[in-house]
Length: 168
Image: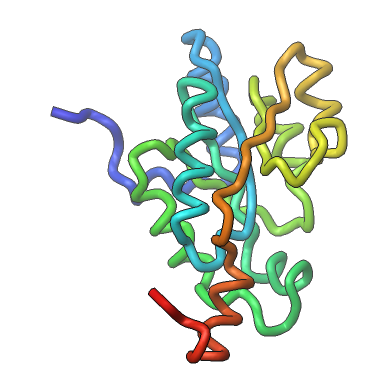
């Protein structure tokens, strides 16, 4: 029988995340960090997050808050509210913590958490990923993961705006 915590307890503040991550690292567990808006969760997100989780023992997901998403993506976003996005993501077995953050980048969160591995999509060069300096300075690694072609929230929103383009 699985002994992990309920998905509802996986949604934590940055201060709580720091304490939990420190405990994991004291027990020699490799902590992976990734982040994003995850506005409309789709297959591409699931495959990306699953691959990120394979990079270590624990996966911490930094989640942009509604205010942060609106600043980054524009006034019509997010489509799905922060609490709902956090709840959906926390329900995935391979995600250990969901940590909402209000800044435009997760730099301060990464600095506080001090993950062992930092992961982003392959549309970034490793050295351009926010937090690269923090993770590399502590002897960790920064890795990229290829996206699943044809899956993006922007594309899904576009298809919903033009129903004639929806084929699945």
